Amino acid sequence: MKRLIFSEDIFHTLAQMEDKEAGQMAKAIACYAHDGTLPKWSNSILMALFSLFRKQIDMQTDSEEKRRIVNKENAKGRNRQKQKAAKTMQPTDQVPMESDSATIPYEGSEPQPVAAESTPFERMTSIYPKLDSLDSCLRESQVLWESLDERARKEAIGYVCKLRNNPDGAEELGYLRQYLTARPWEKQSGTHD
Image (cartoon, rainbow, N blue to C red; front, side, top):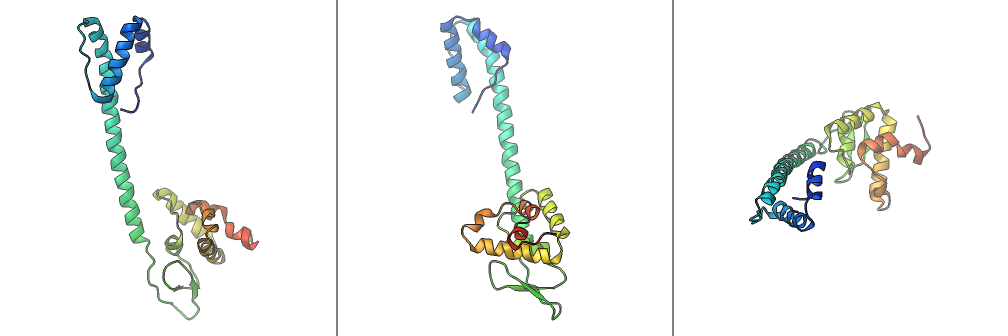
């Protein structure tokens, strides 16, 4: 057990005990919380008082164990979501729709053509190094992306590629939602909407 929390009443009970008995009680509490070792006292008053502490320690241990299990399951769920998101957000092979297509670079293989009228959000998520792990934040990133005009989308992607190729610049990249909110590509190019 990492920590113990006792009510003020229990503290007052310890304060009223003789120093020797309070020390024995504190040692017994620490041993029981650490490894479940019960004290071996012949003094029935000390054993009765210890039973009060024991009840609280047991409740806190159970609560901590339940919290640990829930946290472990939540972490597994987040890992499954990340793996699922990574699979669904892999760059797809796209064929130019018409002769007026633009090329948008991303890290990996050679650049792939994208229709000139729209740069999909998936293109940005396929090159951006730090995606938000919460679905709500990722949806917010998508809303921010969709609010950008096509020129701003291309500048945003180009700026990410430029920063990723620069070892010092990669540190500048926060999470995608923060990047799209801050619009650093506009500061770099001097264009503001």
